[in-house]
Amino acid sequence: MELQEIIDKSSRIVFFGGAGVSTESGIPDFRSADGLYSQKYKYPPEQIVSHTFFTQRTEEFYEFYRDRMIFPDAKPNAAHLKLAELEKAGKLSAVITQNIDGLHQAAGSRNVIELHGSVHRNYCTKCGKFYPLSAVTETDGIPKCECGGLIKPDVVLYEESLKTEDIENAVQEIASADCLIIGGTSLVVYPAAGLVRYFNGKYLAVINKSELHTDTNADVVINDSIGKVFSEIKVN
Image (tube, rainbow, N blue to C red; front, side, top):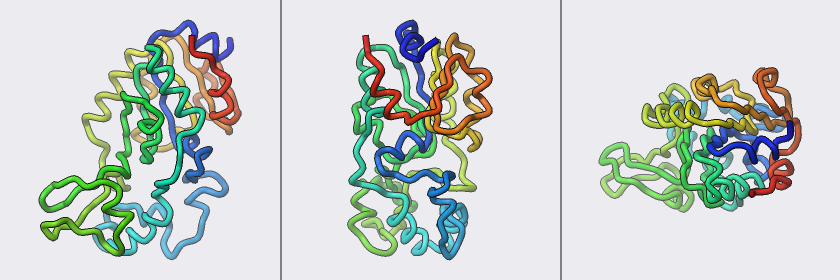
């Protein structure tokens, strides 16, 4: 069965995506050969993007964060745009993403569950006031609130928990889907990767450049560029 046929036959599609969805927009992933984890820094990237490092070495955290985690000029690619088109057509009910770049919303998707937060939301750890991305990009050193408090990105760092509301919403969407498309993720980051077990629908499709352990259960497995695959999909 082809992906197009599955999409045509489905009425409640949920897309579960990871870093591979955004690499074609010029945003590096974490685990590939040229991803963040394979690059050399004074500290391992997974240590730098941890809650402990953020609280103890905040200035060094922001140095890395501005340099390697924020891509304000990135634009949505064919996958983002097609998913937004599928939602507008009433075929897709939700996008669940592990990405923090906001590209799904930039493409026009409305129901986006951001499991790991977003670089576009930042808040004062003292008074709770929210700030846009510019509060980080247009400042140097440690960004501070008007009240003097520390501004923190609303992204889930290592040692931090995913928001209960996001998990519950994701489970609900996956459990009620008749089609789940998994794209651009290695499905090794938990608890996010564990959410796919709640899928009991009819069709499971996997689009990823490398093979996943979920492939054996899938109706369709495509090891190719996700942008290329989605650009060939027709929305009926």
